[in-house]
Amino acid sequence: MSPHATKVLAFDLDGTLTQHKSPLSPEYSGLLCRLGEKYTLLMVGAGSCVRIFKQMKRFPITIIGNYGMQYATVKEETPHNRLILERDNRVEVDKELAVSRADALRRKLGYTSYQGDTIEIHESGMLTFPILGTEAPIQDKLSYDPDRTKRREVYAQVVDMFPEYKVYVGGSSSFDIVPHPYAKLYALDLYCRAGGLTHEEILYFGDDYGLGGNDEDVYLSDVPFQCIDDYRTIPEYFKKLL
Image (cartoon, rainbow, N blue to C red; front, side):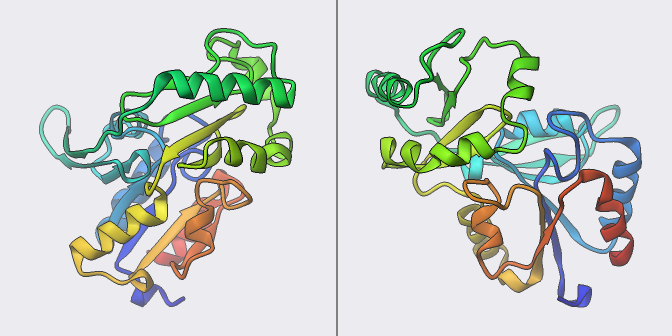
């Protein structure tokens, strides 16, 4: 795709612009500022807008959070930029059913040893199924499934257990379970309709485009997609757009 057709640069965060749950670096912040002079910048995240805003060190960028359940803009103010949450959709969860499904899934897959809660139920209505439990040590989580192979092997069984949700291989040792119809492509469609844009006018950068990845639906669509397999390489692509 020619960069001259591009109006919006859209980004995943973890693994694309930053290391997992690490702050945006000054180098990347500077590059984004330069890109912002030519393009509209958009963050399309799996996490909440507040979490993304803090991780990006309050960088002024429009944020889609929670797979489209949230939408926020940033007002540039001194001494700190301010996040304005403009959409915050929530879905009611049958908590008893969610826990019973998680317990059944653990028995079926052999994930019966865990620390903390069996499932995390977020205020938004999203769920997190943490294979090691909500209170497992961070090092155990990071070392459990770094290449996502273990989770992709059982992905279809998790999908079957939560039929009214979209399921993603999330974090380092968990599954994100998101109410229909929320997804990154759905969120981009809403954004395009609101702004009078076409898919061809967006260039999306993402790392999680394999089976069950939260960028997979965008990758498989007609949205121009730049695969990022190592967040440290993204400046190479930025320089071509400047």
